[in-house]
Length: 163
Image (cartoon, rainbow, N blue to C red; front, side, top):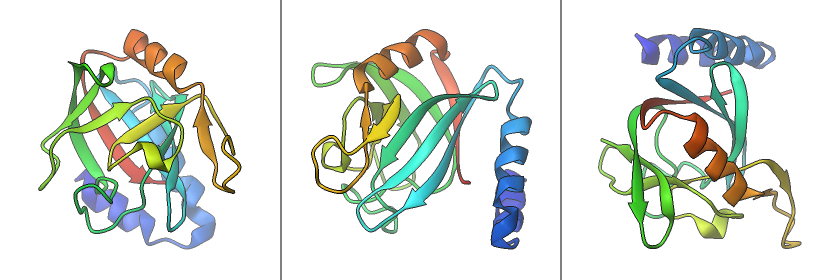
């Protein structure tokens, strides 16, 4: 049902995109087990979005652009994913998206720019061009990830949609 509604609303006129954002935010505003990633600005190098929990923005996101869900060069497709906490030597505590079609080890982790991801979701507090490459990066990523680990449940569903 979610896919049908998202698909239907995304085909509306561009001036109605706020309707989709409002719909998705309100649908998941009172749930403890859903986190919403709304993707906004897209370019050939990166995709910028916002992460919401209980109807409030908790982070900004940075991903690669969608390139047919190809491993290492694409963000994940729109949809709903199970997410669990995970620990690794490379990233420490972070989140792991499960059951991504034809992909594995898609994570939500700290980083600053599109070069720090191979298909994962990078989180931060705000955006700025940190390395003067004319692309917006995310800043305060470690602090943001630490905050997300404190406020998000150990298991949740991530809904990924276009704003």
